[in-house]
Every structure is written in C-alpha cells, then in structure tokens.
Image (cartoon, rainbow over all chains, first blue to last red; front, side, top):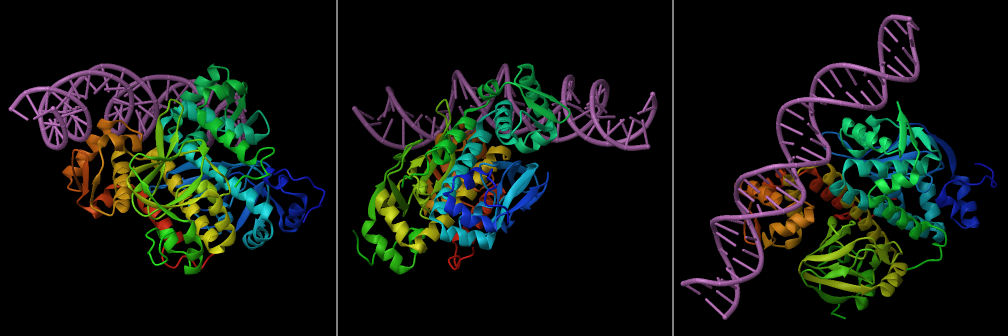
Length: 242
Length: 242
DNA sequence: TTTTCTATGTCCTGCACCGGACAGACAGCG
DNA sequence: CGCTGTCTGTCCGGTGCAGGACATAGAAAA
C-alpha cells in the first residue's frame, strides 16, 4: 500500500525484523487520526489495529453516569486495538484521538493472520501488552494516592513524549476530563507548575519549558512506566527472556 | 504428581480440553498458600505460575514511600505469574496471599514449554490475561471516582466469591490497606453496611448476610468485571472469536 | 472597532477523607 | 481472675477537592 522503502515511524513496527515487517506491509494502510475521533467505542467491537505514527490516543473507561476516566495512552510507541492481540474482538474501553496524527491501520482479519504467521510479531506485541498492563496498573495506584498536581505533571510528560514538540494544543478543560478532576483544580495546579517555570500556557497552547523540572514535579508513576517500557521494548530487548 | 482422576478445582485448568490438561498434569504440584506469603515481590523475578484452588491472592503495586495499592485479585478462577503468559519473567507488582488456600504450581520453564505445546492453553490464558486487564482497568477508574463505601462493598463481594463461605477472616485494618484508605474510614463504611443488614462482623470475622443487597451497595465496577469474566471465560466462551 | 466565544483565574460552600489520637470491647493467656 | 494485645468506634483539626458561580482576558467573528 506504500513503498517498501518508506521508513516506519511506529516503534513497534520499527522493531520488527525486516522480513516480518515486509510481510505485514501490504496490509497496512496509512490513515489520518483526526482530533476527537473515536476509533472504537466502550464495550463495543474492535475491527482494526492501529499503529500510530504521530498523535496520541486515549483509552477511556466509562462509568455509569457517563463520566469517563482515562486509563491508558497510546502514541507512536504502541498500538490501539489491543484486544485483537489477545484473540478477542471486543473492548471494554473507548479509544479516542486526543492529539491528531496519522497511523498505519490493519484490519482484524489480516492482523489475526499476521499474528499467526510471525512469531516475532507475537512476541513483540505480547511484550507491548505487558507494558500497557503496567501503564494501567500505575494509573490505578496513581489515581488512588497522588494529588492533582503530580498527576498533571505526569500527564503532561506523557503528552510531551508523544507530541514531538515542546508545544502542543491542550486546554485545562480537556486535562480535567483526562485526570477525572474539576477544571478549576487543573487551573490551580497548572498555575503552580507555570509559576515554578516548568510549563507555559495561554488559551489552549501548552509548552513544556523545563522538562527535567517537570519530571521532578511528577509522581514516580511516570518513571516507573517508562522504565518498564525500556525493559520490555527498549533497545536490546528483543533477544528474549522466557 | 497426583492422580489423573483428581478433579481440578481451578477454573482455568478445568476449562482446558482433557488432553491438554493431561499433558500439563505431570508438571503441576499441589502447594499450600499460607496467609501473608509473598509469591513474588514487586519489581522482581517470577519463577512459577500458580493456579489457586482455594484462597485469594492480591496483586499490589508499591509506591515510593512503601505504601501499597491493590490493583488486582486472583482466586480459583485465575492464575498468578501472569508475566510468564506474556513471555516475560519479571513482575512490577507483588503477589501476596490474602486468604490462605491451596494451588497447583508449575515452574517457569515447564510452563513455557506447555504454552508452546498447547494452543488451547495459550488461547485460554490470553483470554484470562485480557480479563485481568479489565479488572485493573476498572480498579483504576474505581479508585479515581468511587467513595470508600462502594469500593468496600465491591471488595467484600470479590472476597466472598473466593472464600467459598459466607464468613471469612477479615479485619478493618487489613481492608484499609487493600483499599488504600485509613482504617477508621473502613470502620465507618463497614458500620454503615452492617446497619443496613448487608454484612455482620466481629473482631476479624466478616460475614455476608445479604449478598444481593451488597451487590446493590457496590459500584458498577464489580458487575462490569464479572460480566467481562463471563464473556471471556464463562460457559461457551471457548469456541473462539478472533 | 465591537461583539461573541472560549479559556482561564478566583471565590464560596460543603464534603470526604486524612493523620492522629484515644477509649471501649473482646479474646487469649498467665 | 486480671493482664495484654488486638480490633473497633469515635472524635479532633486540617486539607484536597467537589460542585457551582462569576469575572476577566485573549481570540475569532462581525
């Protein structure tokens, strides 16, 4: 569907052995990820796997009353449609685009076939699934114990990692939904971070001005998840353990 | 290691085709799960998979400062050592026995071999992994939004499911650690549930007296997780989707 | 320019829960 | 029997955040 020489910008695909990637390529179609698009709804069918090349997708649990809580984030380092990796075609959570971008899409049937063909793909995606589990685990602990300001810092770091730019679009209103707190709560926390010189923002534009300071202001959950990512999917992780 | 005719009381093993189970049996050893035993530590190696036949095991994330937050629970319906299912031998979370019981244990190497041999085992355990993910997801949302009383009710229901008895050992102190709240907070919530006639307790003995009422008092998270379990692992779930 | 919309800052009240402390109650043990 | 340890109920002050409201300030539209 696109030239064999086009470099892939999704880390998972990039980590595949060239032959495995080559076999996968004909099934991969580039697609846009427009802001606010729902890739699949909560408690509904999953018809494709997306490998983002840019942008950011949130996974949101929906509670009765309709309120949503973010439990995971996917960018160019991962994939959406995780249930398909497990051989299921149904998702408990909604996948929604939070920063526009592009992705490579593969339909459920083709994906299933590819998984059966390629042991490298299976191993890699299972490691990603384990990382994602770690992310959700840290979110559960974080939601239970950490104050807004630390969670905000964590979220901004994750967004910064995916944005590919120090500046990106982001309102307090939006952040409040992601963190599951009130909007003024975000304003106060963001103000504190801004006064500390870690970020700058005006009307929906957010900029990270002191990355290291922001890391120090966040809870450990960010680092724990990143360390887990590196262990499972970082350089040198493909010669495998168990 | 034990007679081929001994019925297995672990739901996952019981759901295996007889031939697959028979092949697995020689590697399975019955072990005790004494109260408070750590099966594997946080951020440490996982050397075996355990299929509990009774009792209950908590998975606990540890935050800096040493405080622990429960993110998942395993009983006779599941297994511990989930990273081994993903081809990894390391766990971010601690697995600790919270209600004594027994389990069937299989070492990491034998488990790995069994996974390679049996497609049924792989499929089944991947579905369990997906259910477990749902459990952690709901916990993340629940920790973010639900008050102590509802979370307590949810936890008691989960414990009740595993206990195999309407009465079981359970102190407020212990519950407070599991829920990540103060002990008096549990006392107040438990008192409310008791006054409503849903539970009874004295000095470390807890009894569920109105199961349906307790379900009504809990948040939806309990039902959501149970529905997901039924869908993935309940009767008739083995002829597979994707 | 003025109008309108959206994003942000700020204030209020109220509640859930924290951290800490303490007293009563029950159980096991000498 | 009393002693001791553990479990539970309750109260304190304090805080973080909810729910709600309102003012202000950029930005976009007219």
